[in-house]
Length: 143
Ligand SMILES: [Zn+2]
Image (cartoon, rainbow, N blue to C red; front, top):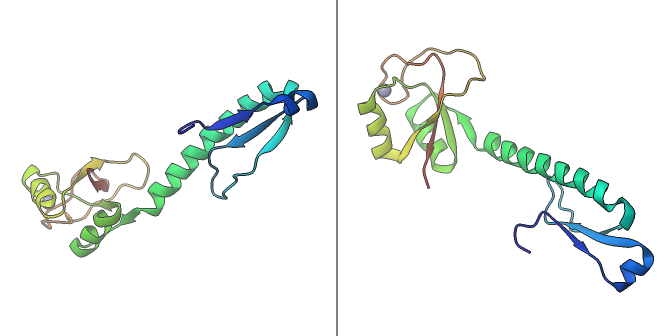
């Protein structure tokens, strides 16, 4: 049953009543472990809608997790603290040697340069050199 988003239980009593018991594996943001009896003939349409809602819920939960664990940082101590528990949005010079130094100190590496967000220039979070890319870079640790 692990990994199954929606479970349907159909026993003799359910069949006699023309219903099926539906339960979701998880919900977000509120837990919802309750089972729900749905009419058997409505199950196919309902399941399609439930699966679409489940997919949207997973995407929302992942985006919320990402946003809750991403910090905009402007100093090295902030950077180190942010990558210890999630991701850091920081300006970087784009130099490989600087990137290697960051990796040695924190095990964090650049993950991506998000398209969203305003263009930004400044100084590198590590070496203080001029920033590259015209954007902040997301750094994170690999697991
Ligand atoms: Zn640098």
